[in-house]
Image 1 (cartoon, rainbow, N blue to C red):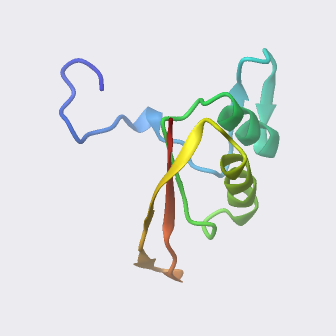
Image 2: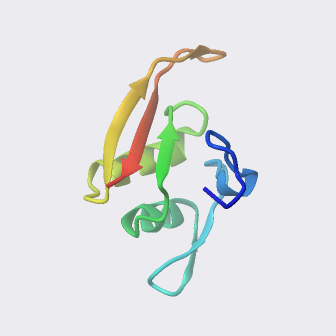
Length: 96
């Protein structure tokens, strides 16, 4: 949380959707798409990751696999959600 920021708020620039990612990590190069998501998760870049497997299925599949094989994250909660796609839970992972 930044100085002066209220508890429970977040900054818009901190939010990343799964439609596109350009990531420069510890490897030094810039990666996009599936490779970018896998590298960012491998590097422990995010504090919290939430996905539902429906909004962006191809990216969500890559993200889910990277999280399940990562030692940097743990599944914190499965959040029930009913919306446009029906009953689709969100999987919330947090950095260890």
